[in-house]
Length: 453
Ligand code: BES
Ligand code: MN
Ligand code: MN
Image 1 (cartoon, rainbow, N blue to C red):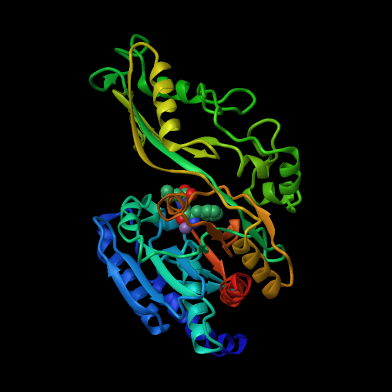
Image 2: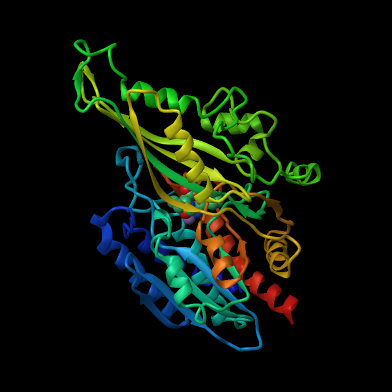
């Protein structure tokens, strides 16, 4: 296996770079033909890798790419999931090299989507190609790569429900998460859910002269700022009534287990250039970013933000707010609690509208399954180290839906690093991680086939 990889390393990399040149930004309709081009590229590479039936499935949004290689009905079936869409690349001026002109510096590939998720799902296509070209593929494999993950996978739930038979599998394998470091491999055992809302606060029916009216009416920006500030208390806890009611608290033993993951607070602060961390009292930074729910303002606007000064008392103020959820919170419940509370705390003189965006359920995967064991052993085989189980802070909303719709658990075998700058300028993916992933994935198939037989 290693020899095939060695012999084809440059081509594997060149193919990924080609994919990274396609600006498949799902959020912006200006890129929709590029999104389709990326889907077609992935389809063609699946065919070239030796998979059957590679095709695009149309949805009301961006297409889903699917292919399969069914070797033996007696063998277990692995469903690989990934996403070929990427986040918008702006602000462009903060990139050291253009986001869609992949560049290799310091043994890293710099490009939008390098890690999230093109670099990561492409490892699977190359790992499958390697298995097919060498000692064979020990499991059946189905590959589904979607184009709407970064905008909430709105149409994938329906697609999955309508293609239950086609997608039937024993396990879902996903590389779209991170490891602790290249020295300390890890396997994520959970994802946070998400509830995302936009709020609009309206004061007077028009923008006013801030001298003529200032002091006499509510300023919606002042009101919004006060309301947002009240959403956390002194302990860093969220003040929305009922917000924590369904939260599953981990046992001391579970917390002790998670605390075994190596972590340096100094390095963390240094990396982010902050003089201190912040968060919910009584929890470590790792806990705050994984097993605890959060509420964060993602954007806030209103009034005059152009050059110079304009003395205006605005009519409206807006904010986008995300809440990361943990078991057993649900986006519907939390969005509802938020809406009731946010409306209730509006001071007299303004009105509030809350508009829900996409959401997703949190997810936890058991660590005592043969699937987890196969993944854990794959890391041991390729890295010479047992991976540390961790709980992730990000969200992949479709994972919980896969379990609901298909009854299949997912294994989160990501190879990225938190420092890969996902969604940020200068996103990158290590060449080491790309090639090590291609080397690790076939061990999963080998171990899984052996454990299931
Ligand atoms: N791959 C990420 C999620 C992720 C990153 C999980 C790192 C664990 C570690 C995914 O593409 C993503 O960005 N998800 C979004 C949610 C979506 C609904 C926009 C997120 O987490 O913000
Ligand atoms: Mn992703
Ligand atoms: Mn992402």
